[in-house]
Image 1 (tube, rainbow, N blue to C red):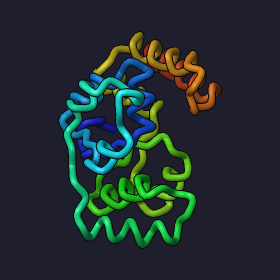
Image 2 (cartoon, rainbow, N blue to C red; image 1 turned 135 degrees about the horizontal axis):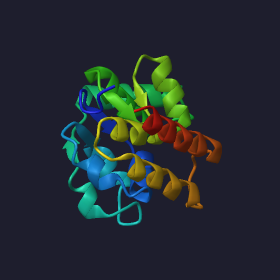
Image 3 (cartoon, rainbow, N blue to C red; image 1 turned 135 degrees about the vertical axis):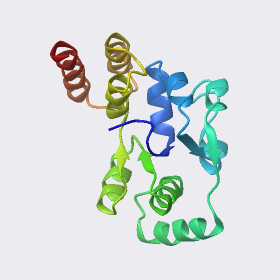
Length: 171
């Protein structure tokens, strides 16, 4: 998959993970990465990550119809936040890719036909699309692995490191 072929809508989990992996700047400079204005204003702050990096990410707005759809979905899906649902609705309506670290949102989105990227997949794609080299990809995974607040299962991080190493050997 070419990481830059479709617009990507990102959530706070991805931003936090990529910041912790020291990759947010490179991710934010991709022409096709966007954050919803609602998410940027309500969830992102200096505790989440470096605001200068966040300000490099392009902002997109949800339409009033999308907000109404999100509100309808929120009544039906109590386990997903309004922020999760608005990301889903905008991605679905525009055939965008949704980048999320939230497993419930991932399952819901994929079940409803939205393509989803997770943190480790983004790292692998950044490597395979020559945005970062193998060493930087492995370093990013190790930073996530050593972060006491990571939500990503350590076995998934270890498997990704091994996969990146094998890909480098095969080339």
